[in-house]
Image 1 (cartoon, rainbow, N blue to C red):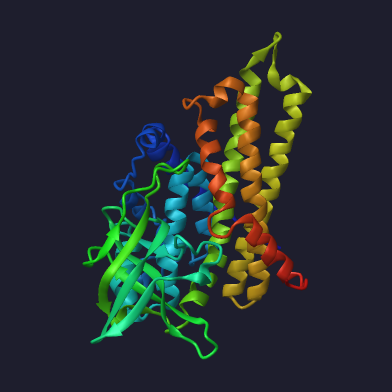
Image 2: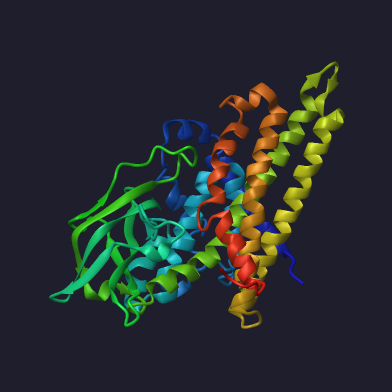
Length: 394
């Protein structure tokens, strides 16, 4: 059965020290200013965080054998201090690096991965559109071949790591034709930053994740070489869905970090906050809620690391794709909803102080909601879990 080794725990300690030393002292100020700390990315690269799943030949390799479990540990620990920095790593690796690593040619890997693995640059993953969210197959962005180049027109929404000063490339899905049955042929195309006609719109004014780089994208007759096709033509949608399967485990790890932090904050506060002459933690109305937080944290931890273990086992041929998909959806569904509940409980325990931005629970409360939406909503996860159980589909 799965368990974390001493090497895993040593790595956790390393990332926690980094998060508490490099992020925690500044995060309240960064969050207030909606500042994306690009200067932090090379430091994360030096720690090996962006290169955890990248082979040494492409600039990665931190001595952990490419295990997905290590990435989840890193995301959990960053997310425990700040969710926006956790999603920056999750998207940078899971959505930026992984598609290139999995489907790219050797030339594409050699071109893009070394800088991405080092944190010198970031890559985005352009799937969602203004009218194609959960229905990602409804992509309207189009790409046609003209004189050996793809000409791309359309737009994308809510794309992470897509418009920072160090963003190097965004991989986007686009309609590249029509199949015999009338359905759209969707392919993945890599568009470098700075390509004429490619615009990263003004950053979103978001409810949470203020320190995360998030933009809408527009493509106006963007021309890139035909060789910028990522993977096989017509397989782009399937490639991106497979990418999301892994991403759901990583999002679950991010949610786990949120739940754990809420347990820590609520427990500490309830020991020192006095009411009617006693610490509020002595009252069952508070202590029972904290007990519920402990159950959520423990359950989330088990689900996340079981799914990560299955992913690593699948890489060795010992588990099936369907096992991993089911575990990923279960982990993502439970932990994201637990995170939203945990932040609500912690904020309630803090009372009026929980409504004040000087307390971390307020930031985590704002940050948590998107966990139930990004990389597959809770409704989509329930649909996928039911499908995995063999239930008839409507």
